[in-house]
Picture (cartoon, rainbow, N blue to C red):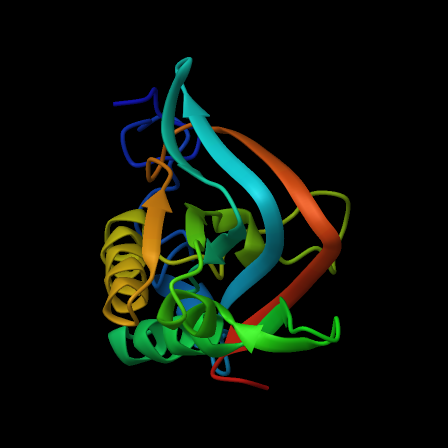
Length: 189
């Protein structure tokens, strides 16, 4: 496994303590009404995740998906967002219009893969001061279960899914195609 990122569960010195408002505890939990899991989807010609010099996951044509889990997100949210990512039309048809989804390509036997990378910083709130707050981020143990459910739901859509290493410090490489980038939230706002 890769080395732990400075914010991960295995790095006790950096992890906020219980009751600090982080990940569903204390005062922070009351501010989480209306939270939404977030996926940043980028169409790619290739993408890879490297941890400790080793490739953990890689895809050719497809998408790189950064997944940010907020406190209060449910397994239902994971499945619905995975379906949206799988069925969202961001691949070109014969006329060059974005009319094809990853599921369309897979059903037609065309190679397509999704590289899913956990990205807790998508839960950041930068509205105050110069330092982001991660109070809205889900507890890493719960977020990892959510992340796995999301990936399983994508596989259930018939897609090839590769992943990074949850909680690890990763080098993410990609060749963007377009560039085409979308931010999808569930529930959709």
